[in-house]
Image 1 (cartoon, rainbow, N blue to C red):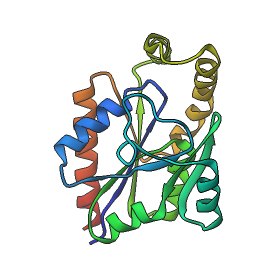
Image 2 (cartoon, rainbow, N blue to C red):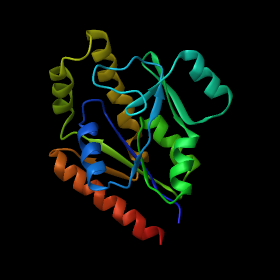
Image 3 (cartoon, one colour):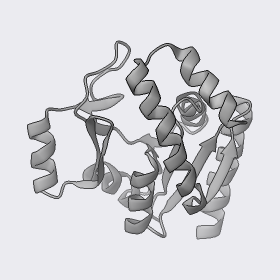
Length: 189
Protein backbone atom coordinates (compact mmCIF):
# COMPACT_ATOMS: atom_id res chain seq x y z
CA UNK A 1 0.00 0.00 0.00
CA UNK A 2 1.13 3.54 -0.74
CA UNK A 3 2.19 5.86 2.03
CA UNK A 4 0.13 8.83 3.10
CA UNK A 5 1.07 12.46 2.49
CA UNK A 6 0.04 14.31 5.66
CA UNK A 7 -0.16 18.06 5.08
CA UNK A 8 -0.14 20.38 8.06
CA UNK A 9 -0.87 24.05 7.60
CA UNK A 10 -1.69 26.93 9.88
CA UNK A 11 -1.21 30.60 10.42
CA UNK A 12 2.25 31.87 11.23
CA UNK A 13 2.53 31.73 15.01
CA UNK A 14 -0.10 28.98 15.44
CA UNK A 15 2.47 26.57 16.89
CA UNK A 16 2.88 24.30 13.86
CA UNK A 17 6.56 23.58 14.46
CA UNK A 18 6.02 22.46 18.04
CA UNK A 19 3.10 20.23 17.10
CA UNK A 20 4.96 18.78 14.10
CA UNK A 21 7.94 17.94 16.33
CA UNK A 22 5.62 16.04 18.70
CA UNK A 23 3.97 14.16 15.82
CA UNK A 24 7.33 13.24 14.32
CA UNK A 25 8.60 11.96 17.69
CA UNK A 26 5.49 9.79 18.07
CA UNK A 27 5.84 8.41 14.51
CA UNK A 28 9.58 7.75 14.04
CA UNK A 29 9.04 6.02 10.68
CA UNK A 30 7.29 9.04 9.19
CA UNK A 31 9.40 11.02 6.74
CA UNK A 32 9.51 14.82 6.84
CA UNK A 33 9.37 16.61 3.52
CA UNK A 34 12.13 19.15 3.22
CA UNK A 35 11.02 22.03 1.01
CA UNK A 36 13.17 24.32 -1.09
CA UNK A 37 13.31 28.04 -0.38
CA UNK A 38 15.15 31.03 -1.74
CA UNK A 39 15.24 32.79 1.62
CA UNK A 40 18.31 32.81 3.81
CA UNK A 41 18.43 30.33 6.72
CA UNK A 42 17.56 31.54 10.20
CA UNK A 43 20.25 31.07 12.84
CA UNK A 44 18.87 27.72 14.05
CA UNK A 45 18.09 26.24 10.61
CA UNK A 46 20.20 23.63 8.85
CA UNK A 47 20.35 23.16 5.07
CA UNK A 48 18.82 19.83 4.06
CA UNK A 49 17.09 19.45 7.44
CA UNK A 50 14.78 22.44 7.76
CA UNK A 51 14.85 23.49 4.09
CA UNK A 52 16.99 23.18 1.01
CA UNK A 53 18.29 26.75 0.78
CA UNK A 54 18.76 27.45 -2.92
CA UNK A 55 19.30 30.42 -5.20
CA UNK A 56 16.64 32.10 -7.32
CA UNK A 57 18.35 30.62 -10.39
CA UNK A 58 18.20 27.07 -8.99
CA UNK A 59 14.54 27.57 -8.10
CA UNK A 60 13.71 28.81 -11.61
CA UNK A 61 15.46 25.76 -13.08
CA UNK A 62 13.36 23.42 -10.91
CA UNK A 63 10.21 25.22 -12.10
CA UNK A 64 11.34 24.94 -15.72
CA UNK A 65 12.03 21.20 -15.24
CA UNK A 66 8.60 20.67 -13.60
CA UNK A 67 10.39 19.26 -10.55
CA UNK A 68 7.95 20.70 -7.98
CA UNK A 69 4.67 19.22 -6.79
CA UNK A 70 3.80 22.74 -5.69
CA UNK A 71 5.57 26.04 -5.45
CA UNK A 72 4.61 29.50 -4.38
CA UNK A 73 5.91 32.94 -3.59
CA UNK A 74 5.33 33.93 0.02
CA UNK A 75 6.21 37.49 0.90
CA UNK A 76 9.46 37.99 -1.02
CA UNK A 77 10.71 34.42 -1.29
CA UNK A 78 9.96 31.26 -3.26
CA UNK A 79 9.03 27.95 -1.63
CA UNK A 80 8.56 24.61 -3.33
CA UNK A 81 8.14 20.93 -2.63
CA UNK A 82 10.08 18.58 -4.85
CA UNK A 83 8.12 15.75 -6.48
CA UNK A 84 11.01 13.43 -5.69
CA UNK A 85 10.49 14.03 -1.94
CA UNK A 86 6.85 12.91 -2.11
CA UNK A 87 7.17 10.11 -4.64
CA UNK A 88 10.08 8.45 -2.88
CA UNK A 89 8.10 8.16 0.34
CA UNK A 90 4.57 7.31 -0.71
CA UNK A 91 5.61 4.88 -3.44
CA UNK A 92 7.72 3.00 -0.89
CA UNK A 93 4.75 2.77 1.51
CA UNK A 94 6.11 5.42 3.89
CA UNK A 95 4.10 8.31 5.28
CA UNK A 96 5.48 11.79 4.72
CA UNK A 97 4.61 14.93 6.63
CA UNK A 98 4.58 18.24 4.80
CA UNK A 99 4.27 21.70 6.31
CA UNK A 100 2.64 23.75 3.55
CA UNK A 101 0.71 26.98 3.19
CA UNK A 102 -2.92 26.92 2.08
CA UNK A 103 -2.08 27.15 -1.63
CA UNK A 104 0.45 24.32 -1.41
CA UNK A 105 -2.04 22.16 0.50
CA UNK A 106 -4.68 22.67 -2.21
CA UNK A 107 -2.21 21.77 -4.95
CA UNK A 108 -1.00 18.63 -3.20
CA UNK A 109 -4.57 17.46 -2.52
CA UNK A 110 -5.34 17.82 -6.25
CA UNK A 111 -2.30 15.74 -7.24
CA UNK A 112 -2.73 13.03 -4.60
CA UNK A 113 -6.47 12.97 -3.75
CA UNK A 114 -6.43 9.38 -2.45
CA UNK A 115 -3.07 9.59 -0.71
CA UNK A 116 -3.30 12.97 1.04
CA UNK A 117 -4.63 14.05 4.44
CA UNK A 118 -4.85 17.81 5.03
CA UNK A 119 -4.96 19.27 8.53
CA UNK A 120 -5.15 22.95 9.47
CA UNK A 121 -3.82 23.93 12.90
CA UNK A 122 -5.84 26.83 14.25
CA UNK A 123 -5.08 28.92 17.35
CA UNK A 124 -7.66 29.13 20.14
CA UNK A 125 -8.46 32.65 18.91
CA UNK A 126 -7.21 35.17 16.38
CA UNK A 127 -6.37 37.54 19.24
CA UNK A 128 -4.15 34.82 20.74
CA UNK A 129 -2.50 34.34 17.36
CA UNK A 130 -1.76 38.04 16.96
CA UNK A 131 -0.32 38.12 20.49
CA UNK A 132 1.95 35.14 19.62
CA UNK A 133 3.20 36.82 16.46
CA UNK A 134 3.92 40.11 18.20
CA UNK A 135 5.47 38.33 21.20
CA UNK A 136 7.98 36.44 19.05
CA UNK A 137 9.86 39.67 18.32
CA UNK A 138 11.30 37.99 15.23
CA UNK A 139 9.58 40.12 12.61
CA UNK A 140 10.15 43.58 11.27
CA UNK A 141 7.09 45.84 11.40
CA UNK A 142 6.65 45.29 7.65
CA UNK A 143 6.80 41.48 7.77
CA UNK A 144 4.56 41.43 10.84
CA UNK A 145 1.98 43.52 8.98
CA UNK A 146 2.17 41.15 5.99
CA UNK A 147 1.76 38.08 8.21
CA UNK A 148 -1.25 39.61 9.94
CA UNK A 149 -2.79 40.48 6.55
CA UNK A 150 -2.19 36.89 5.35
CA UNK A 151 -4.42 35.58 8.14
CA UNK A 152 -7.57 36.86 6.39
CA UNK A 153 -6.68 35.06 3.15
CA UNK A 154 -5.81 31.81 4.93
CA UNK A 155 -9.09 31.86 6.85
CA UNK A 156 -10.99 31.72 3.54
CA UNK A 157 -9.22 28.45 2.68
CA UNK A 158 -9.71 26.52 5.93
CA UNK A 159 -12.92 24.93 4.60
CA UNK A 160 -10.83 23.06 1.99
CA UNK A 161 -9.02 21.01 4.65
CA UNK A 162 -10.00 17.52 5.70
CA UNK A 163 -9.70 18.52 9.36
CA UNK A 164 -9.13 21.57 11.58
CA UNK A 165 -7.45 21.04 14.94
CA UNK A 166 -7.29 23.75 17.59
CA UNK A 167 -3.85 24.17 19.15
CA UNK A 168 -4.73 25.17 22.69
CA UNK A 169 -2.24 22.68 24.19
CA UNK A 170 0.47 21.39 21.84
CA UNK A 171 0.44 17.82 23.19
CA UNK A 172 -3.36 17.58 22.84
CA UNK A 173 -3.20 18.98 19.31
CA UNK A 174 -0.49 16.47 18.35
CA UNK A 175 -2.51 13.60 19.84
CA UNK A 176 -5.56 14.63 17.80
CA UNK A 177 -3.43 14.67 14.65
CA UNK A 178 -2.02 11.23 15.46
CA UNK A 179 -5.57 9.91 15.79
CA UNK A 180 -6.53 11.48 12.43
CA UNK A 181 -3.56 9.78 10.74
CA UNK A 182 -4.50 6.43 12.28
CA UNK A 183 -8.11 6.84 11.13
CA UNK A 184 -7.01 7.84 7.62
CA UNK A 185 -4.99 4.61 7.35
CA UNK A 186 -7.91 2.53 8.58
CA UNK A 187 -10.20 4.14 6.01
CA UNK A 188 -7.79 3.29 3.17
CA UNK A 189 -7.80 -0.46 3.86
